[in-house]
Each structure stands twice: as C-alpha cells, then as structure tokens.
Length: 226
Image (cartoon, rainbow, N blue to C red):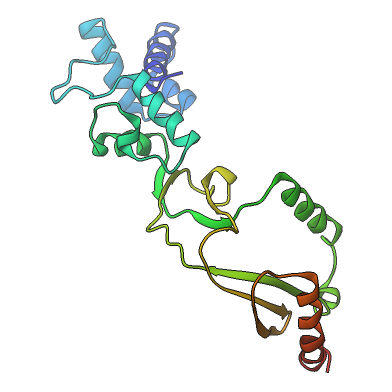
C-alpha cells in the first residue's frame, strides 16, 4: 500500500472511531498517535468534510511511478549502471533522488576474483566442514596461494546498492584472472603471521609448484612449526 493510501486509511479510522463514541484521548491511545493529531483531523473533517491532501505549491514531480520503478529495477540488474545508460531523459540528480528514496545509495563495490558456482559451492562446503574447529586446529593450518598483480586499471568504481549488501554477488565487481599481468607470485600465511613470497616465472605448472615447495617447506617448518 502506498504511503498516501495508508494515511487516508488512518484518517478514516479516526473519524470512524469518533463516530463510534470514542473520545479523542482513547482514539490517540488506540492508534498510538498524538492527541493533537486526532483533534486536528477531526476538526478538518467537521469543517471541510474532506481528508484528502490539499494542493501543494512547488515544481511537479519529474518522474512517474512507472519511471521510478524502471530506475529501481535498473539499479538491481546492474548496480554499476550510469544515469546516461537509462535513457530516461532526466538529470542525474533526479535519478539519485529516486534511488535514495528507495533506500539505494552510491557505494564503493567489493572487488573480487570471478568465482563460478562450483567455486562457491566448494568454499561453502569447506566452511561448513570446519565450522566448529577450534583455535588449536586453525593455529596449525598453512594457507598458500598464487597471486597475479595485473597492470590493468578499472578506474574509480562505484555501485548503487542497499545498506548491508556489500558482498551480495550482484554488487561485487568480479575480476577475471586473465589480463595484462605484470608479476606472478606465490606465498603462504598462517595463524601467527606471513611467510615468504616467491616469484613465479612464466606459466605456473605442477613442476614449478614442486620446485617452490622444495625451497619453501624448510621456511614453513622454521617459522610455523619450530
């Protein structure tokens, strides 16, 4: 129900309860509103016989309800959409106002590597399997991975989203592993800190991974399990 319809229904209840014999104080208590509000609307009903909104001065609204819905749905489909992409022939300021009215705000997106559905399922399964493991377990875990530092630059990124939806998938700017690569590295971390970092030359193969482990495992034993 629209806010305006809700208000009219409330005003109608005030009149109906008064006609049913209730006092202003009882009406206010029953509806959880101020007694002066009850008095004001009953006075207006008695004098004018009408509870509808009076005409207001000022500029007319620049968008219809249909256009407002187009703006909201467009921001959901692509949170990174620019105002010019909507082709509604309205100003960016108007678009921002309509999105703010819908609780959608301009935020910096989370930037993460692209994950397939299989990646997501595997990560969730891992988290569930180890959900109740304690500190003794995690302090003995070594985490290792490769990292590509890319020369590509996406500029300043922003997205339109609701509060508390930073990690919602549609609001994440996903970066594929392919692209202009400036450096490949491999490293490890554990509960108490970071380990060593090794440079990867060329494509990361199984043979190269074994060579790195031959060099790095002694440092893992030294730092993590002295």
